[in-house]
Length: 122
Image 1 (tube, one colour):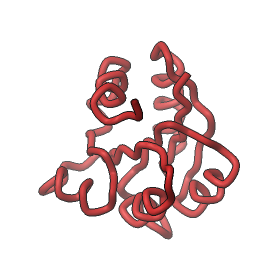
Image 2: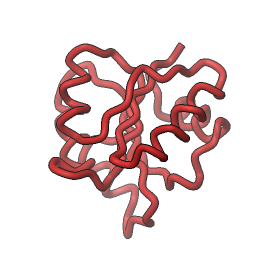
Image 3: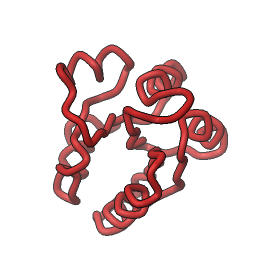
């Protein structure tokens, strides 16, 4: 099972993402954080394979949180998510060590599986 940490400041999205993760074969939700700071604290105790990380968070934003997560080795695969389009999503993801970016509306079980197949640990 691939453990997933969900990081988003909107409880409704976290609930929907948890349901999505739980509905995807081979994935399980390990926890939810509403801020970058909370996610970093949770990572001290959890060992997720995947972190779905909102770009816009209160306090430390998703970009800086991703930098902190990916500075550690080994680190989980980080996927940035946002409701907004990014001007250059590949460059944004690359700049902070994230594997990729996906729009929230595009998340579904098939997308989650594809993300892991393309960017997850072997």
